[in-house]
Length: 271
Ligand SMILES: [Zn+2]
Ligand SMILES: [Zn+2]
Image (cartoon, rainbow, N blue to C red; front, side, top):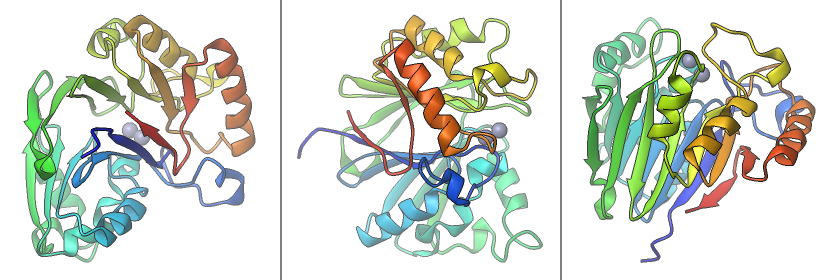
């Protein structure tokens, strides 16, 4: 088997989906990324972008999916309940997230908020609570394992950032993130030498609001440079970030450093 891994962008929005035409260029779904090779599929966050990924996995008859959740704000989990594999009795779904994940998902899914809860799903669902500082290996799909490390982030209510390492390649997923105190130094250490750093560019630099738990592409670039990351992939655009304004920021950012890319739905990066 070709040993190239495929990173695919399925959702780039923060807070809420943006279905209007002004957002269609970069995409209107909330946070979701996949990293895969053959039948090994690891998903980062279960925003509304997970629905389209789920259709694709159902078509390919993939049977096991490992989903790493950064936190439980709705924009990061709203796609979980429409994930087709949850209703397939031959599927195995492993969900990873901060302590309390199982209880919180049981409270969120099911009446009165949703017709069925995780307990009624036909797939075999296993919930794994991940503590900050932990690392573990995913043996998903029979491909050589990916090592996952977790770091406590800075975001209202808490958040978990993940580093994935496999066969000499690596990436960090750091959503949602506000740089405060020594978070930039700790993140640069956590992301040391990664091929891709996926970053929360929820605010444009001139409009950054402190205390809301998000950051800017300039801050992501600084962390990426300090970490010597190969690429920094910006995402988690808010409603004030229409296609036109994201495009303007992308031009400015790429002038500052060519290793920056702004994520758009359907984008594929080979690693
Ligand atoms: Zn978010
Ligand atoms: Zn959040």
